[in-house]
Every structure is written in structure tokens, then in C-alpha cells.
Length: 127
Image 1 (cartoon, rainbow, N blue to C red):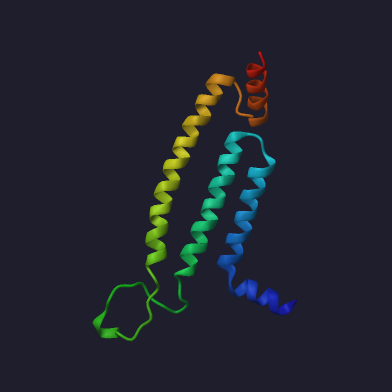
Image 2 (image 1 turned 45 degrees about the vertical axis):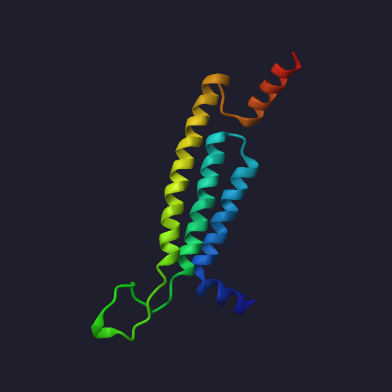
């Protein structure tokens, strides 16, 4: 048990990412408010970004800027950071689109509760 705890502490970015992802997934599964579901999805996305950016880090390494005076230094991997920057841009765009859809649903149905919207849709299709 002690070894497991030590490994969790040493790999704290991954532990935090898993914890955040679990919180986001729990919010998405348990809440019926569409705004809360969107916040849960954003928390899950943040956990994924943290996980990928952490994977490019090397302890004791420096930023990837070439320095001819110290050519023997280890550099962190910039690729995960660059890829996650693209992911963040896509995430913000999808969040804005989802917010627009939620606002449109509110104007149409008068609620943002997914269960109530589903009930209203079922009532309309039965008639």
C-alpha cells in the first residue's frame, strides 16, 4: 500500500487528471441540467489536456530552446503541448456551439432539463 501511495504522489499530474476525469464523468452521468452536463464535459476535457501535457514533461529538463552554451541539456517534448493547444481551440469552439444549442432549446422548450425536454418531445410525437 505504501508503494502505491508513493507512486501516486510521484505521478501527481496523472493522479489529478484521473480524479478530474472521474468528477467530470460523474457530473455528466448524474445531472440532467444541460449546463451542468456541459461543465462536466469541460472538466473531462481539462483532465485530458493535463494528462497529455504531463506526458511531455521530463523532470529536470528545460524548455526546448536551443542554447549552444549548454548543448547537453535534456529538453521537454513540445509536441503534446502543441497538440493540446489545438485541442483547446476545438474545445472552446464546441463549447460555444453547445451553449448556443442549449440557449435554443431553452427558447423552444422553456427548460434546460434534459429529462423534461425528452418528455415534451415524446408528448409531441404521440399526438
